[in-house]
Length: 513
Image (cartoon, rainbow, N blue to C red; front, side, top):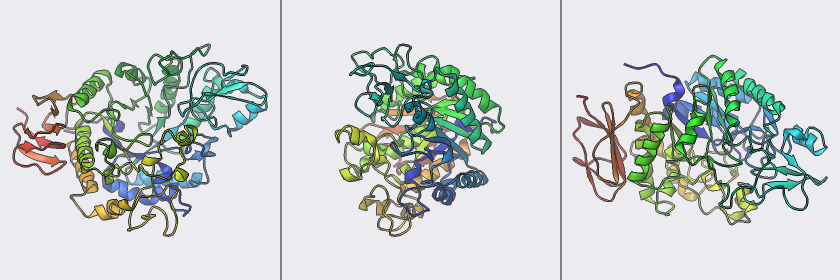
């Protein structure tokens, strides 16, 4: 029996980093028409929804997360009618569309900030008087001070790049502006929003210094996770609930506690919040078990994610530091099965279905992440996980752009073997494995309980069941004996007899008592 639950509760969502997915215009940068052309690939892959990173008008100081106009498409990516056609085609193929919204800061090119520089409406941002030194000790997440000086001597706050001034959410005008932006995109048919820096927005009254240990993303902080932020999402929820079709919102919430994370996911607030604990975890059975237990205890609508556009790709994270390690790929495939077996929804990052590793050897002159520039090259930045997707062919641009166009970031020669075309007719490929895993999950969906039951396992292995599904993942160095079962549903590598090899996971069908 399939229980009717909201689509987002157990959806598989595919993140599209718009600049790097598919380039139809031939300028070397991904765009909305390129995405539309590739939607059949995503429908065939078996995902339920796509999430688009920002495509709004922007000077691109931070890859589009510096928004100059929240109600228009940047010409680099296309037009509003391109967006409408993309949504329409996605819906025709049964795919939902989630768009990114960036409420913590705008671009310094936004008309409000330009007016503020002229002395008009400064209360929409966080300006403070100060002398030679900034008003407090806050640091930019991208390196360096979080304050910049205007020509008239005032300082303005930017928790990210100087081109990204923070809004003052204590000004009601900011509230009403974003409610209007939500309606603008909901009216165009979007199914949900991913909220950038969702635990930001409010800063503590008086802007006190951060403690000596720094300002990491913590539940207790003058910068992050202020209680007032929850009122914002209560207002947003009312707007979402006023539209038909189960519109939803998921927050990017970095915090140090599952309990704090749960505060964002309440019946009258956000539907979901990203759970980054797994993405930050080492390859370890006990570490994975703790994350699963903490998450399921804290939130009713859990999410699971292994990679995104801000972190090192998990094939490389799991690969003992070897960029093209077969170990990393084996572990990545195993982690996918463990993630897809858990209650809740899963978020995939473009290219992980091809087994793409992090590109670690990008030349300095090619790098575009502001983190690289602001840290004077000490921090590599995030370009390595943003290299454009290899679709076909044996040389750059691998079908990402029309022949003869150089992509905005160079693609490695090794990627010829990883293209979607090369993998598409090979059931043993990573792409074939993803398609099969998503197919089996879809067959089981709606028939499995929301709880898991842990079964006895060696320390570095995990064995849990959800009704008739039993998942075993072996993070250790010795084979693990499989529990009694009727048949193997899918394995991340071939299963030999009753033993599961290291760095492998399997789904078993076990008749319920």
